[in-house]
Image (tube, rainbow, N blue to C red):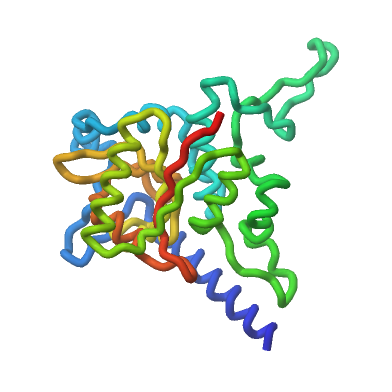
Length: 272
């Protein structure tokens, strides 16, 4: 019975991952109203929103250190690395990643060429292993019938792994109904986008507003008053570019279940 259940879970997970990879690059679907609500940031409208925005301090920092996820399950890892580098790299507080250092031959003076920046390749480590094993995150633990099938990072997982890096993390499940939940989220975003110390990471089901991502995590970089929309620096660079989405639609996409809990958002700041 357990083997049958494991086979079913693996098949279901494979189907989900397969379905997520199917949409064509940059193709957005209309929502219930029959309207496509996503606006790519590189379009004239998208660029105008960014220029007009009064809430974009995070954009300047996040865009500098942006990197797309290196595999389909690393949206949370990529988002975390972007934020960590935004907070610490320019301050000289990012440690060299020893596994990425290059040994210089004696003919060139010897020693190591350091890599003082956070990387998706080294983000998961002994400390994060205690929060969620890398094998589970990467779906490489399916060799026996007792395997835990839970790839990627949930909102709670993401909070836990970030805290291993000595980061202040405030977690907010999007469990409140509209309009209360939308109003609170909007206020949090506007506050964070106006200072240089706080960042917002959102966990959402992109299919809810026509994006080609299902359960997904990415940073928010700016807010535009006139259209009541936020700029998502989508780390799924193999699926679509960055885009603007209305706050209400994004909140509804967070107001979806991921296992037993709702999705939602994290507000993070540094302790260093």
